[in-house]
Image (cartoon, rainbow, N blue to C red):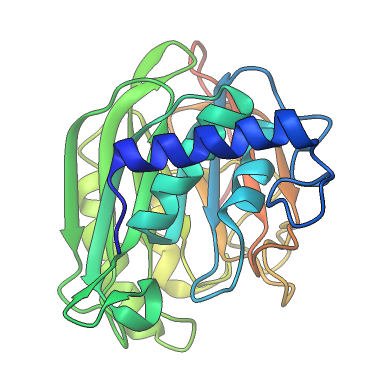
Length: 288
């Protein structure tokens, strides 16, 4: 059964009430100690953006996923491999347990029971999602002409980061052994990104920085990691459990202040977040 928003709100409020009355360490409670990190932020960090492939299908708790996000509390979060019902619950937990309130837009590209469950005749929606502490406008959701072994696409919204309006993209490219398909997908994405003087591109590109299919993105933007370049000698932080960099925060005419890659036991991809300064131009990156 799919729960409506009001039902979910009542359910999450009841969970919070149980924690208050019984205690966070009560046996059997879904919110016993460890689910609420001691360093959880009190409010969003307005100049912080994050990308995270949350892993699907994976038997992970949305309470745990929300707790991971709350540690860093980005202004904008791009999720990949996201089921709508999972993201809805994550939002509820972020608000009711941590006081972090996010708007949401979805970039679902398929309905698949094996990914998102649901009734056999009404499987859950799967794809990308963007959470933003500020309202979002001009939402678009685009499926790539060829998704490879599974439908893939990108979504984009206009929202505010560091107090300024910016176009934010979120994508998940074809699986790692499908470089030719990814090249076609990057061509579609890069054409749209190029229409914007300033943009943030989040996502799981399923390709290492030296992969030739990423060339159009490198021509338009830089990675938030100043040391990461498409040259063979580039020093790039790995973002997956198999020691590859597949996850990116590409910045077009935006300066990065710092970034962090945070492994998570709740996904085979690490969380990658970056703090930005939209008031100044990025430093020259040198040869790419």
